[in-house]
Image (cartoon, rainbow, N blue to C red):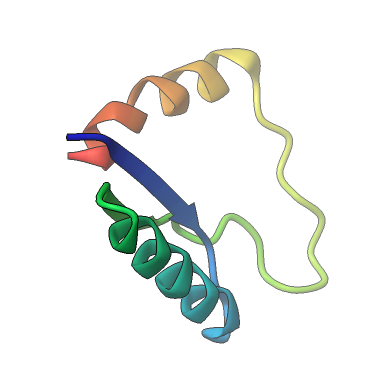
Length: 68
């Protein structure tokens, strides 16, 4: 069976609601939707932190675990 990751971040819930609707549409077509969120990386109005390539790569490698 096909599994599709719906990965989102939602500060106030609007994006979460859209992600849930997307997941329902995926499941209506016969696939399995894996709905996952990510933690906040900066508060509103703060610049995003500088992240090294090494850090980005290590975060990317954990994605398969987030799907499980």
